[in-house]
Image (cartoon, rainbow, N blue to C red):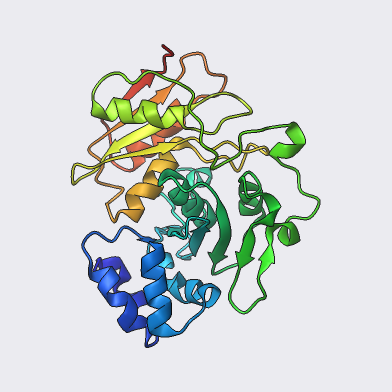
Length: 296
């Protein structure tokens, strides 16, 4: 079991504690639950799905990196595929607060990067802030997505974001989690190609400034993240943060990145370059390359 789960696991009530231990003890556990695993947990605990997700939130919150606020938030994004994806807030020392990641953003992006096509429910241990409500409104689930909180009836995003403004008001057809391919040609080594492929799948319908980041972790894994733009712009998630979310969910150390590549167009009207370089420098990564996106 990864050390970050120890405290949260010890506080779980039986029979959930016994049921979930084999999953956490699996060296391949990557903060995702499959439909079969969820069914087994329900069978062993007798807990229905909404209550089970709420009971698992302490494990998601255990993945938080909160050196500034010391306030851990956990979220679970529940896909229509039946998979559940953990997420947690992330803060980075010596960077602007705008570089932080909210737990709902983390869980949603985690699901997106693993290929989930649509989300049905976001389970979170604290009420979503306005930033996260607007971020969720970019999803192809729209305001119908369910929001589940402790000690409250399940509501929808429409209840939390009435009279919402979002991509549909701007006639945007490709929504967050929809499959897209912007057709950029992979080039360079494996890390550069991963960044370019991430940019090809990025969500930037407002600026068309597609971008992707690939990281080489301390263990030698390549992890890639994509830009997720938002109709309100400020809740947009940079590609570096997307990559850091996946790196964190894999249990890797965000301060032990060996190398990084940012892929973006040379003439894009928005650039991720300065923010990416500054945040990576704060995390101790000095080996960063920037590659230009090219169509065939």
